[in-house]
Length: 261
Image (cartoon, rainbow, N blue to C red; front, side):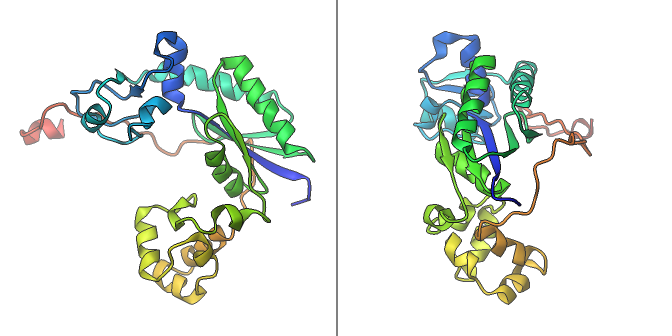
């Protein structure tokens, strides 16, 4: 990868909730929770930053969210509206001089050749805001891993940059599950090996990692902790290999025939 190659990651802030606020400006400044009604079974799909201040986050049961933030505005998921907003955002990003890899409804990677990535990040902010009135956070890195993690430090609506030189200054002392690709279970297994931080994982014994996680995953975890990522940004459209749909039943199903139906 040449010296001027930069990866930028754009992530829309509280996407579902932000779209709802655009549709109803009276919601601005109020805690907004998207996912369903507070008395229903189900989980939070998105929460505004005002709701997050009360400990509400994606995946939290709606009833728990209602206890933590009883004054929140609860809204059902409106996929058609979010899909349209997402299409507008991605169209705006494709107008920039970059390779754009859509990575979900609310985020994308952009590959660019530039000596001034911060200026390009401002173009991303300006283009998305002008086209959709939505705010996004932008991460800058020398690879996709660095850019993705940098975005989290730029939230909300800011820009942050991570490089090979600053990687350990930013992430070295953080727990291993701060890394993109390491979840709670893997972090727990690493802790069992005496590996608790990103810096410790980057220098962990290769053989011990391979024995615990396998010959491929073990070394990959070590490379991940060192901030290394070989994947490239591509604008080849993603082809779905499967589709899913889920329904949360509001009452327990006790008849097995009904369950099968």
